[in-house]
Every structure is written in structure tokens, then in C-alpha cells.
Amino acid sequence: MSEAPQTSQLRLADWGVIRALGADAASFLHGQLTQDFALLDRDHARLAGFCTAKGRLLATMVGWRGGEDEILLALPAETLAATLKRLSMFVLRAKCKLTDASSEFAVHGLLGTPAADAWTLVRDGDAVQIALPGSTRALRVQPVSAPAPAGTEITPDAWAAAEAEAGVAWVRGATVEAFVPQMINFEVLGGVSFKKGCYPGQEIVARSQYRGTLKRRLQVFEAEGVATVGQEIFHSADPEQPAGVVAGSGSRDGRTVIAAEIKLAALDGGSLHLGSASGATLQPRALPYDIPPQD
Image 1 (cartoon, rainbow, N blue to C red):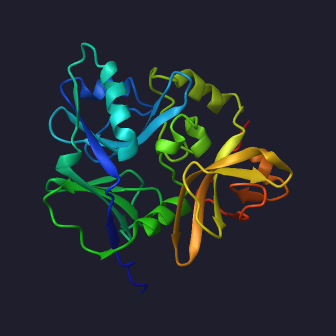
Image 2 (tube, rainbow, N blue to C red):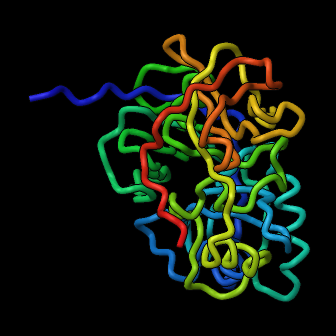
């Protein structure tokens, strides 16, 4: 019998929380985000994106039901203020108040948690633990006064590497408006509902899905050296034109792991390089999930 993996954890100091409170909180978010919040139950979270009218992601987040008439959204702090401001512009007469609740909550990343279906939510008193894609990763959100979860503390770089290995990338300040959701495999990870009604950018997102026009996807690579989010990637055959961009990156066990949005055509031959055509060579690694073929 194999031993259960040892849990390790990190306080994600670069994450924050938005609170949506009111009788219309779910319906309001349902009409603004890529995900179905009208049918959100208390046992699951939702991966969601907030898009421009052109379908470009302004932010990515995880949402779940808190107290009565309350939905909480956890997201990278560098996109929180702009997201809160822009969402607030559309509240109008809806019975929904949006506030920055980051000072009330601590967001932790966990590695080595028991296997569970992605986005399953377990409540532990005032805390919630959300299973992330990849069977041993989770997000735990708890009151800021609560003690840190059990487990060995890991570095931010190690957590970022685990995210990249899982083929997951969050919109950061350097990648605001850089991607249509499918470019970072967002719909594969469960971040887009194609059965719900309209939201900003919905027509563009749906067209990318059903017309087979997507020419870029998130892929996982390894490379020597340091990669930064927003850094351009170049193909050996076209040194003047970027072939992609780093969407997430971290290092552990002496390896730099990169989740990068890449032109699919650039995967057919030649080599990919970080920063310039003479930069560090990217070595492709398999995604931990399947990408559905385009019709």
C-alpha cells in the first residue's frame, strides 16, 4: 500500500478576495462572468473569467457561495482593484454590493491533498478548501486570524511551478487582455459555460469554440534560467515575430517550468526560445489533460 502524499502549503500573499453580497449577487455575476453562477451550489466552486467586449480576459478567478446571498471570488491581487472597479460599474440597480474583502481572508495553496474532482468544495468551519485541476492541489481560503494549514511550507516559486505543471495559468497584470479564454485552455479546465446566457465577450468566446478558429493554446515547457509572466517567446524560423507569451512560471527541484500561450503552428517544427530567438530553448512537456480536437 502506497503512502499518502505529504501535504505542503503556502500562504498566497499575492491573492485577494472580492465579496458580492445581496439578493442579486449570483444573478449579477452570472451576467458578467464566463461561468454559470445561477446554478452554483454550496458543494462546488466555479472557475470563471471576466472579459472585455472583445472576449479578452481582464481577470480569472474562483468563486463559491459564502453566507446567505453572498458569493466570494478569489483572484490574483494584481488584477483585483481593476476588476472590482469595472464590475461595480455594471451593478446599476441590482441588489448586489461588491467590496474588497482581502483583509478578512487568507488564501493558501496546498500540495499533496487527497484526490478529488476539480472545483469540489469542502467546508471546514469558516474555511473552504477547493480541489484544483491536478489531483493533489487545492486552494484553501480561511479567516485571516486562523492558523496556517498543516504541512511543510513551500516557496512561492515551487507553488508557481506546480501550477504551471498542471497546465493552469491565471491572468496577471502583465497578461491583462492578452488572451481569449481558450488560449489558456480555460474552457478545458471548466472555466466557461456554453449553456448560459450573455456576458461581455460571449459572442467572441463562443465563435472561437464552435468555428474552429483557435490558433493558439496553452502548453507546458521546461527551460533553463528564469522566466517571467508576460515574457515573449520566439520561434527559430521567425526571430522577429513573437510566437507566444509566458502565462505562468516557477522553479522547483532545479527545473524551471513554464505554462505558455503558443501559436499551434509553432509546435510543428523548429525550436522555441525564451525572450529572443537566441534565448533559452523551451523543451515541451505533456499537458496533464487532453485538448479536444477542432472540427
